[in-house]
Length: 523
Image (cartoon, rainbow, N blue to C red; front, top):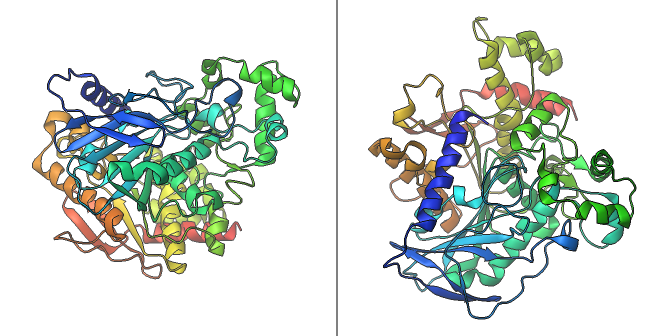
């Protein structure tokens, strides 16, 4: 993780804690009734929030590595003014294995017509992430209901020990983090009307592994009918290219789990081994599995022991997204998808020759496209080549496939840099994840008191596209620049730049075309 991204996430976490734990003298609480009981939230301006709302039973004890169970009802009014603990991870923040809660922001004054719903899934390599980093009040103020949820991560979220299959032969096994997300989406269907939301107008959106999670729900038969729109921001883990960030097969995931258990002195594939694994402290199961370590393991081809990531389990995921899209087996919903101009890449190379060797027989052509004068540094070339490979071309491929399936689709690139950062040589564009403050209409979360009118204008514009898409299924409207549908034969795109929103032919098209040929030849 870059220092800049770490600073951004830390600031968001601190800011949200300040908002959460500030004195509440004079605050006006609102209450709602859902299927499990009454909640007391907290009003702030034109928005009321309900935080730390349980959506599933705590996955502890014998429920570790089980699909989420139903919430127990409560009597009285449950205080929902504070975030619940985050799911277990290596990050230093309030966390617990008992973490399956979600948060809702909704306008105080609601129209008679139910509002559209935006459900956010955070990223973090399926190894870290938490909801306080992503306050939804600014989006809710634009007349939507915003929901975010915690879901299990790392070895607690994606783990397929063979004993689990024997214990639960009729249930999906392994993708517990995805099953948590699924449970939250079902909770939305049951309860969102109490917050003024329309269960028939749910858009799911996420960034990085959160965008990959959106993709997983698009192709899962278990998620069908739970949403009507999808926004994928730099989707990864998985991507729309099967070999870019490969999924684990169930057989591979079982071996990963067995090898990890053996490293802890727990052998065998029976119930006794599973009992021993469940007896381990949750903290033990997160050791050595930070997002940075997981990504480094993916880049070097030496994965962190015990970390399988997303699994083709035969129940929730039947196949790769690429295979599902090619066959048209995805949810037929409108889509926004894109990536950033300085996005993250998975892979490694010590020299230029190593880097261009990734293209196989196309190495010479790749060198001509990426380094025509031979003056680019290895580090700069790695950023460009690996980002194109991992996220940028796969985002275009997803857009191409959606259009071929007849789904309304809009493709973007985000390259806006906050004005206070433009003189910093480290900020040559928008790094991985740094479109989020603008999509959430919170640019001050990135640069604090250095935020400028131009930054606010870009955040107002970007978030308005997102909100309008959730509202009508089309990001266009108002006085915003027209965003045409994606055209797989032309490959024009909208770009959120320092000079405003532009639309035109993608300057990276020759590079992405080369990656497209490479990927197609691997099939």
